[in-house]
Length: 308
Image (cartoon, rainbow, N blue to C red; front, side, top):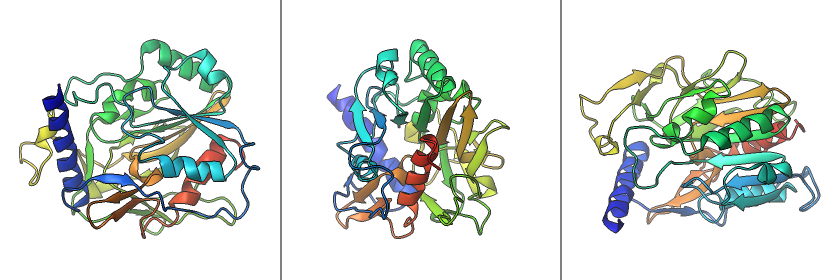
């Protein structure tokens, strides 16, 4: 068991090398990250309850990479708590927003066949809760995270690809309105609070339903690679590795669903703030090219909270 866990950790490190070109390195939360909110939405700890899922082998936790996520939203007045309980009516009853990031079926088995991190009963409860007025923020990532939420996302009309979205040229993943890869909408273009660009670090893509609003698009600059074994993701990529074009695929979108709302994003890094390697390279909201990520996250939460 320990040997298998170490093997998976080495594979994860190898994928980080491929996707970031930063070298073999450990990532830790940037505890010094701070974003000053000029006018918090709520007084301290008086805002709605946000439940952060830690019940589905989530690679991201509020004590780990997503501690800056919680810090930012708490500074905006929200109550943010983690939960290691499966989805239930009782759990969702008091929540305004349910957040799940990088849910996985199994931390050790990343290969095909794909399996859902959420049970059929949990999916039914979440779908009904959103339809009745709840708000879901579903953040996923590259294989196997995409497969782990495919069934859940499909109930809202989203087809998540269980692969690795990588730029063909290996350049930094900047999505911008200037390049028409970041689109104008309620989340990116509220009056006086425009988001002009965001940055990603790999992840995956998906097909959004026709009634969804797209946030960011992949396009011809991307391929999504579809290994059957994560060990196939290495430098250089094998010529035999199957892939599909990123054309027509997106990695961010939102949707009104019944009385509720859902936001889906295909990369978990943009909403974290991490330090990587001995040089403490920044990754996420703290990156120099991601200066608008904190307000971007706030816009997402405010839209889910019906404040935007």
